[in-house]
Image 1 (spheres, one colour):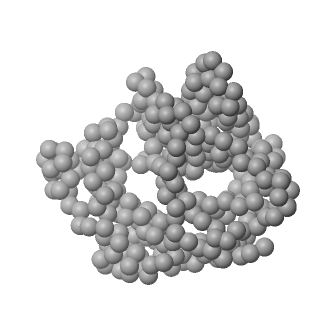
Image 2 (tube, helix red, strand yellow):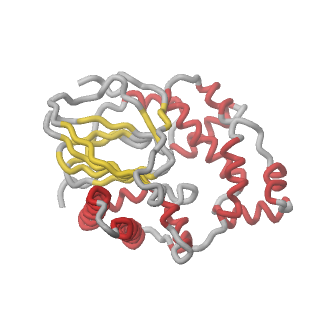
Length: 311
């Protein structure tokens, strides 16, 4: 088998074409009966704005995320948040069958369920944290597995009312995750006003490589300086400065995954001109230096179970 760092290349931003534009999803089965397995060359990272669920029905699938490289086996489920880089490969010589389910979750919330949207928001609650449910609760994992297979089967059959069946299964999947999460999500279940802040959040995303001031963002929302900083912290749970730094570090992580830029170049690309400050912020968010992060992602060849292997 080739080493896991034999091909460390740029992240491919994948455009997802919905099978049904009104359902805002794409779901399909991937299978391979080939005896060939192992790390491909090149082994490409990719990401997309849609949330992705992976379900393994047969065989072994290796998946690498920012956090770890792990092997999923039959019955396992994993969720990947919006724009989270990841890559996979066939881990054994036996057949591999998996379901890939990509979805724009926010499109499946209506006025009555909108207060729960922020429980699934990447801004406040990274979806990968829900994988602890699948790791620790076999019953929840099995229920999620069956719901995703139901969505797949309905999308294939396209029987009358299949849209209703898929929408119901999606809501049941979200409800399953919400009610079984062992953390206190009650504070996130409130209408936090993120929609009002959206122009400011978009501005931050589009100007991470530049100097960003509170005054610039206030003018977008026609809010006073003091009201804005208080409102922002109330809605987001962190200060404006801490949020900007968080987004800068997230962008830095993506740049480090490509393996092409020096530490100084990465720091400048994300708008942090002081290297000491860059290292300090990066270590605060990742418990390691940028160099250690880059080395870990390049040299991570061992795999370990990410999710429970048996009920």
